[in-house]
Structure formats: structure tokens, C-alpha cells
Image (cartoon, rainbow, N blue to C red):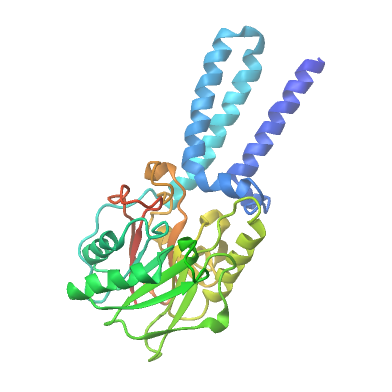
Length: 335
């Protein structure tokens, strides 16, 4: 009797723990230690849960004395996977290749280049292929961004370059964020009055003419142990600056839809909505590139205020061997 009670209590405990991981927003724990990381990898955790369930069922078939207990654990694991798959399905598993952009579309490309690891040539080639008007490059130094702009200028796509570096000596290239903006979009100036993220730089750019959209290139710190408070502060800052009218925010957010706040148009930050969720691409992982896209974490985003129409969004999987551990993302908006 005691053993049965202990087994039942253990099953309930495991079920409760997995429910928190699968549905942390129900308990307000999406930003809690460990859970913040686990919920980002719903696809991978679902696969692991299914494999664990199969293993438990095989063992249960061979071990009569623990059959009920092991079968109970297997059922819980399958239920955990089912919840995750339901959430991922609601966010969307991606779209096919897109046609060339229309004349009225603003193309926004974002790619964490892992401290210039990709090199400027690969960035420029991708930007030219996507016909990008705005290129947000977390972990890209000004030196590399200028070379990218020179290559694009020679290809007939001149760009303004804006960079914010928290480490001027460049001992840590990851503490740089660069944004390139097409000359056709207009001239921009950096707005330092609104601040930035805490550990890694985020840059706010306003149109000098006042006509174009505000462009925010962002890179919050990841929610690793020791940086959770900074990560929460960074997301709060993003929530504060992505407001108003005609605002585009893009980059490596180190957050998934589970970490976003609720807007009138769905999960987002501030007044901005996530292009991936709007277009049915919210379950496609952008990090790390060593995992298949449907098993990775969708932490790279393009968001925009509702007055900008989101036409399309795509995670680019063709440059996984370019040197970065992130996949680029591209969105098309109508200002």
C-alpha cells in the first residue's frame, strides 16, 4: 500500500513538473530558471519525450513488477509531447520559398553572425539574394558591416551603416550590433536617449526626415544562469521601446513566443506583433544550426507595429554551414 501511494505521488509530481514546462504561462513561470530554457526547445523536448515513452514501454513489457508505474510514466511523457506539438502546430511549421518581393515591400533581414564568423561576403550575398532593405546584424562589428555595405554598393544596393559597440576594443565581438539601411529607405540617426539592453547592445534608429519607420536592432542577453535578471530587464526594455507607430524591431531576441507579452493582435512585445506567428512560421527554430529547424529554438524575430502590414516571414536554412550558430530570418512588410 505504501509503495503504491509513493508511486502515485511520484507520477503526480512528474506530471505536474512536465505541465509547468509545457505550459509555463499558465503558472506565470515562463521566465523562471531552467523553465525559460526548456520551453524554448519544444520540438526537441517533444522528440525526447516520445523516445523516453517508447523506452519505458519496452522496459514495462519486460518487467512485470513495475509495469503499471512505467506505463504511467510513458503516458505522461506522451501527453507532454502532445501538448508541445499542439502549441507548435498553432504557431506554424513554416512556408515554402517566396516569390521576389513586390515594389511596395520593405524587406528586413536579421542574422546573428556569431562575432563576424560568417564573414562579410556571405552576409552581402544573402542580403543581395533577398533584396534586403534593412539588415540587422547582432554580433557584427562596424568593420565587417562597412565591408558588407561596400560589397552591396558595388552591386548597386548602397547602404547606410549604423553600429553600437559595448566593447570598443573588440575583445568580445559579440558585444556589437550593426544595422544597414538602404539609401532608398532614407537617412537615419541613432537615438541614444531611450537606452539599450544591458549586456549586449541594441540600437534604435529614427528617420531623419521623420517619414520612414523606426528601426530597432536588438540583442538581449540569453537567459543563462547568472544573467536571468538582465534577460528579464532586456525583455522589459524591448516591451517599452516597441511601441507607437511605424516601428520595426528585429534581431536575436533570445526569447520565444512563450516569453512574449500579450498584445491586441497576439503574442508580441509592446505594441509589436511577431511576423513569424502572423505568417504561420512560429515553430521553425533559428538556433542552433546543428539541430534541424523543427527541433531548434525560434529566438530570432522580426516584429512590427500593427500599422505595418506583414506580408511574409521565412527562416533561411540554406546557410547553416556559413559559420554562425543562428539561422537568418527575413520578413516583408508594407510601410
